[in-house]
Length: 328
Image 1 (cartoon, helix red, strand yellow):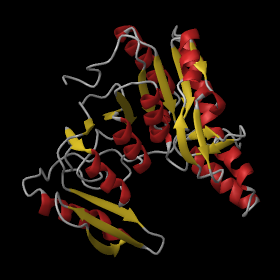
Image 2 (cartoon, rainbow, N blue to C red):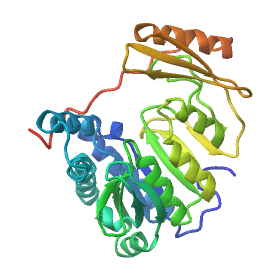
Image 3 (tube, rainbow, N blue to C red):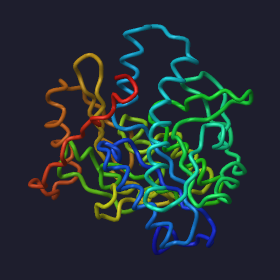
Image 4 (cartoon, rainbow, N blue to C red):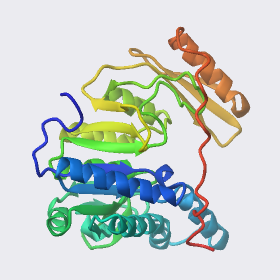
């Protein structure tokens, strides 16, 4: 395999997922739209774009809801908390049209994703390719809200927080796309959180199991259920930095295992440092949250003694200035 698109048929859709950090600024919608237009033109293929809410939006909506109604009906909560993705779908569709690429804005009912269970934490059952296939027959791009599905009764539900990865992977599998590209504000799958450990290495290839373990222990890499779905349906994951940034990213599949350090925050002022070696059980240490970054760097040095200590820090994450758009 020479690249993530190797083996694709000429009409197999590209499946691209953009997390909320892609839209930290309104200009992010323009950058993504132009990138999608370039990819569509270069490949001659239809494109499914899965989008998250602008960074900070879902959390801000949750805070507002809790102030008004500490124990809201689950259906009402799910309706509110998924509205951020609806905004992203509408804005990106509008900007795609502005750059000359016709796109279909897709609601949850048009994704073909069927789920059952609690409205805010439903379990994905299957992905029907028919609705998106029809949308792509009409227009070359379909913009899809991440983390949303419908029940057999037609009710819109959430697949849980941070589940846009799962939506994208499920749609890639349903549409026979061999690769699902996941774009975020980090260079790929790293051996530690680069925001805490600047010397963290970006892995070129890594096994599904390594990423599953990292996610299970609290790393904000790829949603655990997305990894499971990808492995079960034979979809490679290509975790990439946001455009126009460089870097090859990480291909997750039948690759080698890799050691890693994971930091997981707790509610009691402590943080858990987990060391994952290539073989053997996970090793956990509890430390004061204020010491987490330093202890994570020390644990990383033990795994990678030759890692560059003078690596430049990754710029801090930022909440979108427009994350209040739905409540102000």
